[in-house]
Image 1 (cartoon, chains in turn brown, blue):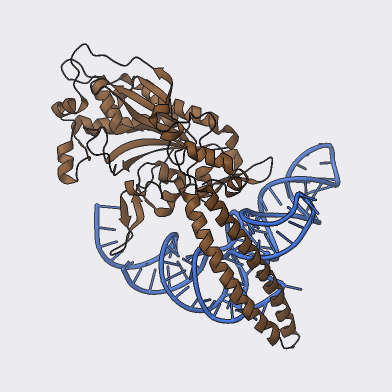
Image 2: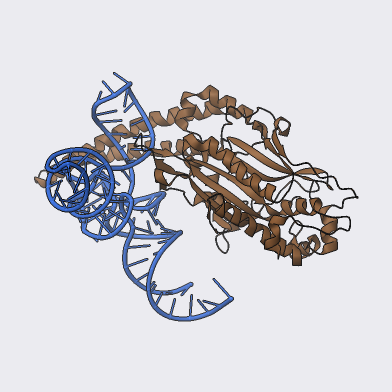
Length: 423
RNA sequence: GGAGAGGUGGCAGAGUGGUCGAAUGCGGCGGUCUCGAAAACCGUUAGGCUCGCAAGGGCCUCAUAGGUUCGAAUCCUAUCCUCUCCGCCA
């Protein structure tokens, strides 16, 4: 959520930022509603002030044994007026809140402005995209031959896009999770969290999946005969882990708070059928290790850099050539102010695959979730900045590992870093 | 799933219709004392919204949402959550 006061005072700047994100603003409607609300609120509050002093008066009169009937009668009328004002204020507030929750975060100044992915900038690359001397097989062919996972089995027991891993494939999944988490907790100083894969609506709203992405989530009902949408399967560990701090105040000395955790992730991927869905490219359930940070605002850009580095280190250890993209304004997610994607080259599929997305949300999520810290200098409570990044998304890493580390016989020679975990 | 108890400020814990945004204690902060510290003593210490250049004023918040009332932390209803006991269960 943006700061309404900020919108009030900088409507042009906000409109410009929203434009860069490809959102038609509606800022003026919002500001009109806001002004109406404040005008009514003022009138309501004046009446309430009157009522409060009259209440004291009534109490005093009664104590002294005097009658207070006339004041009580007067206040009865006032109470009705107050109720009228408040219901109007309530209506306006609801409208305002709805708009506020649907306004995306503004891109930071150094984010390229663009309509879609064409504005993304490659900021650096690591390693040489591998070229095999032989005809490289794609990951699905390799895996089928080696029996590492099956899309068909998943289709039978669940539906399309739910891979089932077997034998060495299943072990690879476990190995990757352990390897990544170990790296983040031992080397990068994160605390491990094992969180629920189902969250409530408030959590989804907190990180910003709701309202915009609600259609892409698996919704659950609270109970028999109840409507779906009280609970959701998480699309990413970002949701439960960031919401751990919802409505809390963090001590400044405890910042930054750094969590990492593994969870399964569930995405409907509505509307993306047929395209880039072969094998593990795009599935409805996958495993992911996520990193989440709560930081002081003045450090947040540096924290984003180090977050990206933490994710890159995983790829380097896995010896997977990759590139780092600074996303343009049109390709960033709803809540992000700045975002780097890590993409790995898959030599058989001949494509770059996004295996990590590292975002800075500034105070956008913190404001939605009311996550604050006490600024030692100003003595004031201020919103923290939140960040998260995949470290990394497994299904696609498996895809890239298979295609990169295959030999001419279709065997896989996994990178050294994974060996202890695969033994 | 059944029965009961309960949700009040950073924490503990009073408060059952009217100067209660809330006693008291602890903690925090500032000070006195001290070479310094501890102890003791004194003072101070919630958040949000809103009006105002400011000083300062107003409103709201005692789990949440409604209701009763001139007036609700206090009464009523629903929901959520926590704890205890019983049942079931990986």
